[in-house]
Image 1 (cartoon, rainbow, N blue to C red):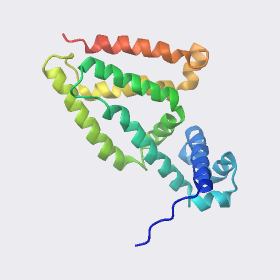
Image 2: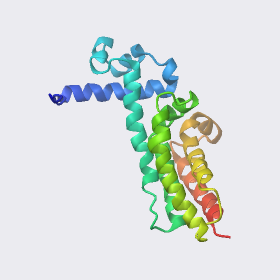
Image 3: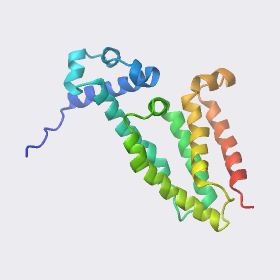
Image 4: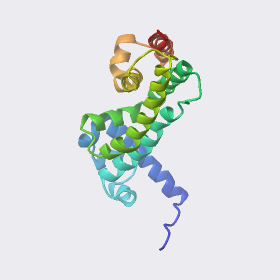
Length: 205
């Protein structure tokens, strides 16, 4: 069986440009609203040139989601069962908030896919994502059972962390309209607030 030829530097550069342009277009217009013409224009390439690298809009979207999901799982993977429970959970909150700050387009891409019913990543959500959440929920439940943290539902704790951190990316326009922050200064305030919130919620009875 023949192996694929490695991509040249120009091919890697063009492929990366397409994915970055697509990330902008998809995160703003959603999958249905995005077009190959928009992506090609944003990437500075002709449509035929774009189609040399990706045969369809679906292929570009799939490549973005595959990369995104791997990055998305990393902060939860880092939650250490052997660490201090409250410190580990607070660190997870901090990692998720940092992702909202540094990867807002990726967060909105993921949110758009979920709002549409996750037609392209539902298998991944039911598979690797669910398996990881089940694993870490069991760790959190174990901490709760032995009194290291408050008695709480680990799944809803994880959902609440997603909601309170990803909000700053998915609803960025609303947050900035209300707070009128200088650059990303509000993320420091958010980090302080969320640490207070979760420390209080996790404190053992």
